Image 1 (cartoon, rainbow, N blue to C red):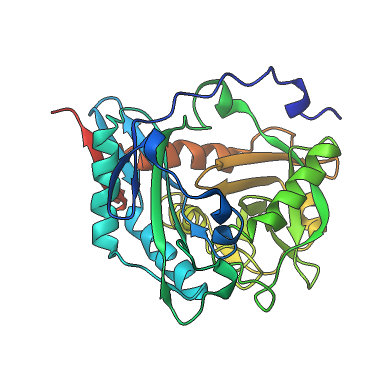
Image 2 (image 1 turned 90 degrees about the vertical axis):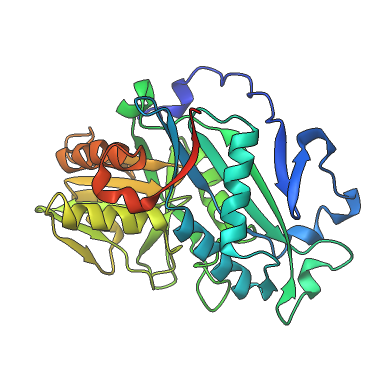
Length: 327
């Protein structure tokens, strides 16, 4: 089997940098935002972040930030686990993000990343007792993976030889930079071996999550996903998917332990996450998933998800924060 990644054309040149980012209380021109080179390593040991998508609605000419408050709540929790306090309230950060999008004239799908870290002379590995952190926010154009040619793709996956970090080692529910080394090792191993992504087992030998996203399978009309105590990030997209299946599509969802071999016999499987959105899984360990194409429930979910995140489905208007609109 040939991975779809190995046949892709070279990636296009990166887009120009935005005009501004937000740092420590205000807007800063992109090229003027600097830290001392000696801070590169230690400042990131305890760093935590959020990935937030904003979606452009062409019909309304409005940029909608999806589940902004949920992301800011999780950022607060991640900072707490790293014993870091925030000098800014969630409301102040929300205003900062909106201001950044407007100043950069964001009129396309955008990826927003607030990053909290211990700055100055305080090494991240020595921080304790809820000491204050610094916060940096960037916002860059990033097209949705579910539009155009991207929307017909899926991933060929393998079960990784790497084991998911456990709550007694490094808290997986914290969205921390250090935690992502676990994901990076699994993703790199999968890529070297000709796959698109890895699926990581936890210390009990059960499925935890994908290398950079949560996982779902479909068996006999039931949607199944590992529980939040399986060593997963408490994913906001995962919560969204569960709600949409139960409330709109009227499909039962079960959160429980998942064996690796359940992926081999599942009718459908998919990843979900803010960056990845909804990505069909086409095979695992060279076992074809269902027909080898995105399944019917996955396709329905993807269509519904696009309507919700772009503000076209007003039933979930409470999940949208306006980021920019035509004057």
